[in-house]
Length: 206
Image (tube, rainbow, N blue to C red; front, side, top):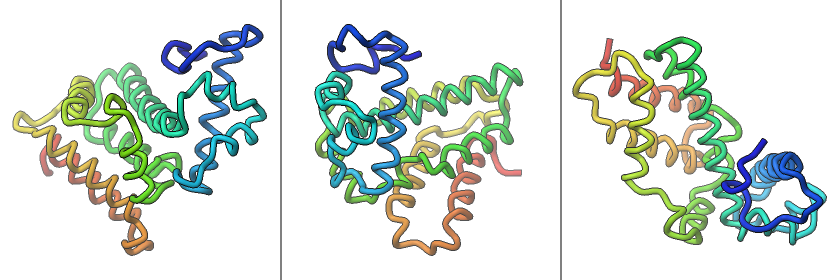
C-alpha cells in the first residue's frame, strides 16, 4: 500500500482504488528503473514509461508533474527502502554494529537498482539542473539522514565526524557515475574499500 499524498502529484480517476494506485506506482517505478538503465535519463521519454506500464499519459501526470520528478521519485524510493531495511535490522537485533552497517552499505552500493550505477555523470548533472530547488540535496538534509543512522548504531566512536561519512558516500556516488573512467575489474573492490573507510570513520580502525 502507498501513501497517496506522498506518491501522487494530483487527482486520480475514481476507478482507481488506493490499492490500485499503490500497485500502479510500484509498476511505474520498476519499469522506470529498467528504462533508465537502458536509455539513461536524458533519452528517457514519458511515452516510454506509459507504453511499458500500459497507461495513458494523463495517468502518469496524475502521479508525477514531470519526467524529472519521476526519476527523482525512483531515487528517493530506493533510499527509503534502504532506510526501512536498516530500521528493520535494528528492530530484529536490538542494535547495529560494524558488521550490520557493512552489510547494509554493501546492499546499497552493490545493488543494480542504485541510480548511480544506472546513469552517467552527465545524466545526473542534467537531472539536478532540471529539478526544483526543494527536490535538490543539501548539507542539512545530509546531516538529518546521518543523524537517523547514528541513532540505530552501537559502538560509534565519540569523535566520529558524520560529515566525513557523508562525503565518502558522495565520493562513492561520483566514482560510480564516472565508472567508465575506472578499471572495471577492480570496481567492486573499490566500492568495498570506500565502504570500509566509512566504517572506520564511524567505529574506528581495528
